[in-house]
Image (cartoon, rainbow, N blue to C red; front, side, top):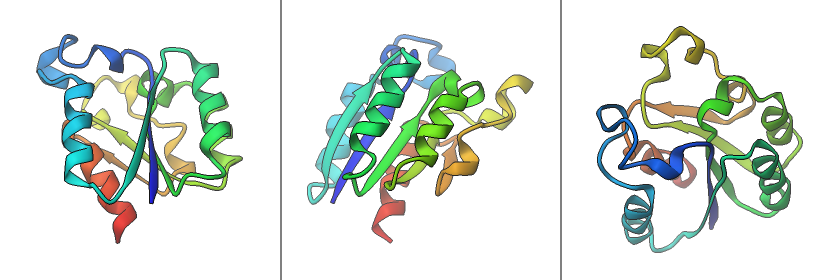
Length: 138
């Protein structure tokens, strides 16, 4: 099984940025643990702060990956382009958020991409990614 993890803007700053919301661990550190936990899965990871690069990556992997886990960051609430890219591919996509976006600022309460994803997992910190991986194993 091949699962692609796609992170959007500012997630490259995990472990440094707003630690009270996002924690102390970098995504790179977490990614190593995730791969160790699921050795039977072939993972690939992509992060970009640029909307078009995320769209291009979805197009590139969205017809061959068994699953895609996406944390589109702030683009969750603004990007029709990412939503359309998810709608246009064959791979199953699960939306992930480290924080519970429904308990944050009101502008974060709506996800444009959620309705075109298999499901959404939020509020479990970096463990949200593990829960998303497990959703592909059931």
